[in-house]
Image (cartoon, rainbow, N blue to C red; front, side, top):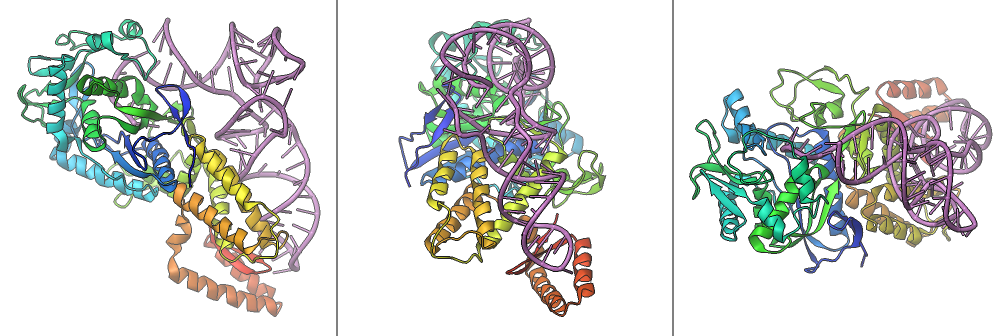
Length: 509
RNA sequence: GGUCCUGUGGCCGAGUGGCUAGGCUCAGCUCUGCAAAAGCUGCUACAGCGGUUCGAAUCCGCUCGGGACCUCCA
């Protein structure tokens, strides 16, 4: 199906018709996590947003190569000033582990959380430490072209020189003067010629653990160069989509553009896409502010024990109720909650909002189950094909999952009213409706009934048996027995739902 | 301080110059042995003050509030 997809491009600050010169092939790069601690739920939001884009592009026929890196090279706590300790090295020292052990531990947890949230794995998940050579080569090329200089074993990008020939602030929209005048004074900058210059390669101090040989001596790559090098390697000098959180725009992505242009002469990316932040009580959730909570805490409503060996959901040791959550929210509830908001808006966490999302999500999942047993009629009272078009229109408008969900709830209404016998649907429309729900709910939004799935086949069999016995009691007007069954099940968080078609059941989380 | 974003009904959250999403909550009704579920109906908003316009929540200006970036951060 040919879809006209519009994407908001940070470069132009407008929605643009998406055009991929190498269609059906599309290259998409997303800045992944730095693994010096566990990913928090704000990180998850960004990756979920790009998962939706990946899924939708794939759904409408593109062959997407989706690259999401893992930063495992220890960068400095104060990157710009070139001071402070390397984050991963610090963890390694504190825990008496190899840096790679630190990275592996968090990578394991990261992938597990991504899996729970039903994110598809990227096509390539490159490690910065595995691409040191590429980063060195790129740095050499930038030096050769005159946009970088070496100083005492470190290499810096010459921003002011670059800015004379190119627009350094294309992404941020900031003028060089602005940036020069408003940068705070920082320590440890004496090696740099210009205050905006940033490291492509950094000489390692004796105590620095993660270090590699280079033409400039032992050291480690600067933070920004890895994405440029890996993007170029796997997606080419110019590729279609580059994404990340919008907090990366002014520094990381701005420098990525400068490096790539400095190295190759042309803009690296056609569409820059940025997602907004997740907030807690209106404030950005971030590691540096310390107002983060972990996926496992959100999923369980419990607090991670201080002596927990890991925060990975399958390994975490929990200790008591989490002060922020009234209860746990399943990963799919969380995913649904995120999808209710457009990726470019901030999303604020609250129990009320989460509980509303949970109910809405259950309703959607129940409708999909009902869809499987719907009866057809001679005519249709709803225009399914028009609804399908609306779903595509929503996604084509810069991946508007919020409007897509509104349309899907119209489908839910149709499903339920047909099931109630108040409306009818033809066989071909029913097939179309099933296709629509499958395409958008399962494939594009990536939602699945995780609560129900966790129940398993045995439970399903037992439930059918219980429902049958209760139905027999009701047939004999033995309401004492049937109500006892219902009440006892309710204590187990199982809700029975009677209808003309029989009795269904639902698990409350 | 500089740059930029934002303020929608009880809550969350879309959105376009006129046709006024959706989810949750609440009330009533239908259905039901009772309940739940499901459906239907109702509650109808765009921070304030000006301006542009036949018409603005949507465009412009100002005021007030919230936030982000300018240091690492998704």
